[in-house]
Amino acid sequence: MNNREDRRSFLAQSAVAAVALASWEAPVEAADSISLIDTHQHLWDNKIIRPPWLGEAPQIAQPHTMELYLNEARGLGIVKTVYMEVDAAESDQVKEADFVIATCKGKKTPMKKAVISGRPGTAGFAAYARKYEHNPYIRGYRQILHPPNRERGLCLQPQFVKSIQMLGKMGKSYDICIRPAELEDACKLVDQCPGTQFVLDHCGNAEAPWGTQSSEYQTWAKGMKEISRRKNVIGKVSGVIKTCKPDKDKAEQLKPIVHHTIEVFGIDRVIWASDWPVCEFTAPLKEWVAVARKLASELPSRDQRKLFHDNAAKFYGI
Ligand SMILES: [Zn+2]
Image (cartoon, helix red, strand yellow):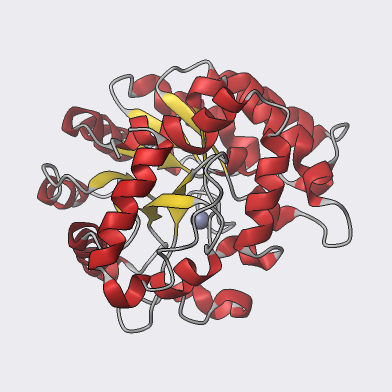
């Protein structure tokens, strides 16, 4: 489906969804600009789920609902979204899954698919994942591995590896979100799971202030090159804006990271995402979209369409 058709079908759906989308019908951009699929959209609403870590993130701790997202996204050209799990408490996992399945199924919002939470290192993961094996709205699973308190090497433990191999058999994906110095571990996981599709989140969690001459940058750049050699991994251009210094041009700060990510994975294996509302630590959604469009502007428009829309449409089947 091309962008114009996307818009038409989206607007038709929007007309049905009167209340939440009243402000959503008009915002699409001029016909010649490239539509975006946001492949990493978080939502939290105290009535549904409240991630336990929000207490340590007062800047974004208020409810972030679909309605708020649609308001922020007005005029930015975002035509579809993929929900991304929010590191909810284990006891809230099913509630989160039920919420996103109902949202996708309701067809009243741009949310088309979801990546839900899971604990692949536990024996109970298999039964949990089996519940959603044939659910068309669940594309995959994620457990973040980058918080400081998460033990190194978790993703290489036998139970974890077995779970990720199982996801491949179920046709589900796994999102890797790992500390940049541990991309080597991610490579080892991928090597043991050749039948599973992976997405590497947030440009491998590189940090803008490093500078290209730093050892951190060099280690990360090498790790990215190495993981990108695995053809069952795609790279997600997201997250990194939250590491930018506020007083400097953000596109300039992010240029080496984003360009290296696109270069090593190649234009057919990269997707874009907002990571909203986490981007709000340094930039509202509107600013990140503008920075991303600027960073991609050197690419031919066909390649920009791949990054912002077409690759995601294919990977998520939306
Ligand atoms: Zn995120």
